[in-house]
Length: 219
Ligand code: AP5
Ligand code: MG
Picture 1 (cartoon, rainbow, N blue to C red):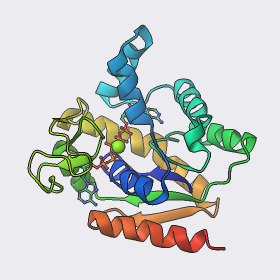
Picture 2 (cartoon, rainbow, N blue to C red; picture 1 turned 90 degrees about the horizontal axis):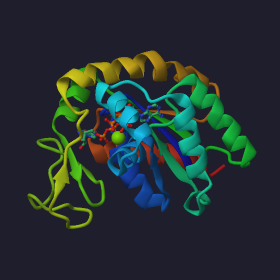
Picture 3 (cartoon, rainbow, N blue to C red; picture 1 turned 60 degrees about the horizontal axis):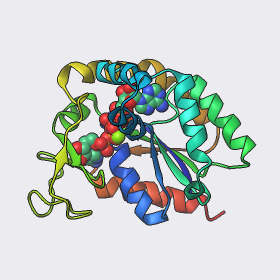
Picture 4 (tube, rainbow, N blue to C red; picture 1 turned 45 degrees about the vertical axis):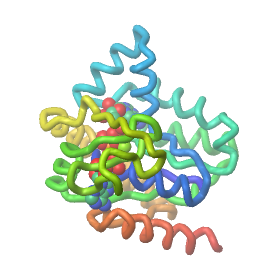
């Protein structure tokens, strides 16, 4: 299964990617997670990336395209992948087309999660995740089954993102509507576009995604 997950910050891309990874046994290629890992590792270039991410703006296309192009060559992507957070601009979408063509990869679906602005702000402000496996949680909307223990891996430590604050959210939403939303018509024309109501309960969103994917991939 080869998928793109689209949607504004807080739409549930990472949450859905985790369930899709388990179902199809394919990796989640989250550009946000990759950048955060690079920033934590620390280098001169990464300092600049850190500043951009903390301001809620987009990291330059050239860097992002190289990151994904390199990642797609890794063996775990052979049976499929979930692109979470890429592409995010028209330039990235065109570059991805070229990468897929070169590797003779055909996408199975471009899933776009639609959500209300007020809801995503609430989701982002309360978000935290497992510091070991990355499973996402929320102070009120999605808490671990046993308080303080990750459902996925049993780990007991969690982290919050530096860009999950009220000031940065506005910039992140603006970046989405100015730079990312314009690629939606491009994917609508591809015949692979699947729009899903991201305001439903987490497992209802998951079921809606797999229902369409599994009908589409049967033919
Ligand atoms: P990135 O890490 O991709 O962040 P984002 O796009 O802002 O998206 P989020 O991760 O905030 O939201 P999500 O949709 O994954 O939501 P989640 O599932 O966690 O990017 C960060 C930064 O990196 C960017 O700002 C940019 O600077 C840079 N960057 C990354 N990629 C780039 C690119 N390609 N080009 C340039 N720059 C790039 O859910 C959120 C919360 O809601 C969670 O707490 C969850 O539990 C809860 N939740 C989820 N679904 C539901 C539901 N259905 N109902 C109730 N609660 C829910
Ligand atoms: Mg995410």
